[in-house]
Length: 114
Length: 245
Image 1: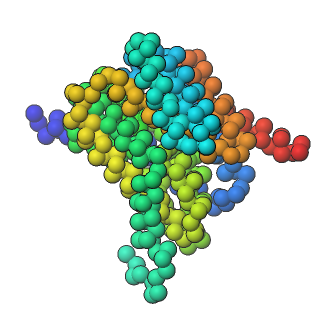
Image 2: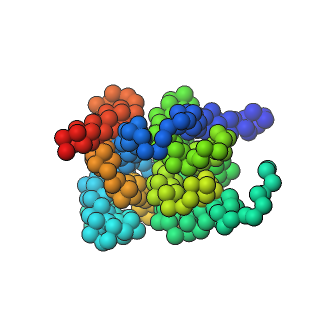
Image 3: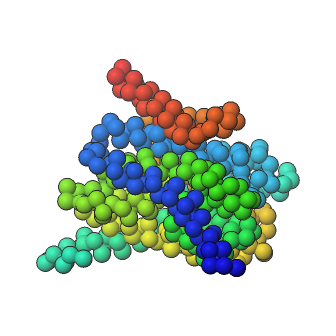
């Protein structure tokens, strides 16, 4: 194996992984200059960020990667809903919500096959 | 390094950094990160990457969903240009997060280079916790706090990804699936918690619905459109409600 062959995966990581994500953060640093914390612009920007984050959540659950894809879609969706319901019911505890969601996912998969 | 000012107050940068490290020990996200990165380490092992590569991907990329994309796509032999596009699209969300976070951390004396590290630490888990914790401390202590929190989160992620890499062969499918589920469920529940304004709540609901529809419609750049359409729609409804009140 030549030197390039050995370093190729790391070069790919920088070009394909690091730069395409980091560029957004640095653009954020530039764009945040001179914006006040309580401005209307920040309310809009936060709504955009929240919508994208919600989109990431929905895509990870519906078009699931790896081992999660072997679990039934209906079980994944019910587990998400159960997690939010538990969070709201149990004194707004994030831990309770996450634990309930994962518990429902595991039990649902055991009951309805994976 | 500038010399420490005479008569240090408890809110020195170092004390704020330590407070950030401590905040991580009681954050639910530390557990979420441990579980998520065990699954990412195992995924990296299964797709034939080295443990060093997986660790570097965590330090450099620091975004769980993007790391899942790069590992599964490169590992399956997708063309690097296509993978770069997918990673770049999933990274779009980082920009509004940084823009929303930095004004909370800045003081008039803050210089731009001091914001580079908090920006690099910005990922969904970090952002959600930063929005919750930063307003609770004096403004001058916020950057130190956030850097401490980010350092602790990243350290937990690195250690967990190494553990996951070596556990990969003995990880049952059920457990691996449950670990991958930690990212979406924790993002969802904590975003529900942090959404106090109408605009945020609407953005959450609209985003959940729009993203799968845009993906199925195969319009491309689906997350970016979800953000722009969903976020703007939520913001406009919030404005109309305010105006009519």
